[in-house]
Length: 204
Figure 1: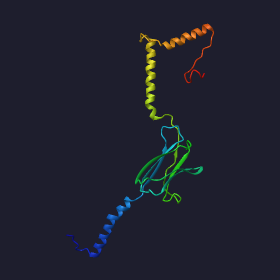
Figure 2: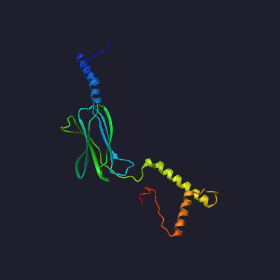
Figure 3: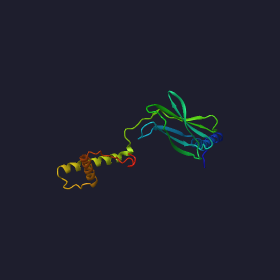
Figure 4: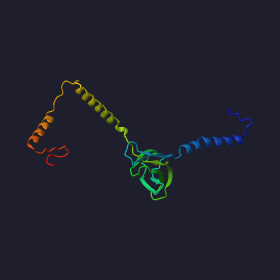
């Protein structure tokens, strides 16, 4: 049994009402809060002129339109992309601005409107970001390691062959034929036609 001694019915009723409001109303407000995130960063492992844009939306705004606008200090805002949601409450999307200038500062803003032809409101804006080229693409690291390994094996084989560590090297008939053809052309005073193989033999 609840002990109400020293606690009036009026005070108890008011406390009970505030408790109910706090339990049922506050969580609904917190969990229905809109969350919009937009971030921008330089595209990694590229030749420049590209900025990646990532957005995260946690709101069922499936009846309106979203717009990403690019801001720069020395030019007017430019619309990068227009899109709408597909009945998604949680949405993550990645976009790429491939028309950015290297070493120029940009800011990207996310806009939303319930009506495509109506007034757009801002949902967030990024900090300044710049596009820049990278000297080396990290995704090509296995290729670099393979080339280094091949060059090491090649030079070791050449050193072993010079020092007599390799007893026999098989001759290539194609190389011998080239040497023989050049020798004959030299004896006859005739020119030599050399093709690199990039085109057909009929297109000299």
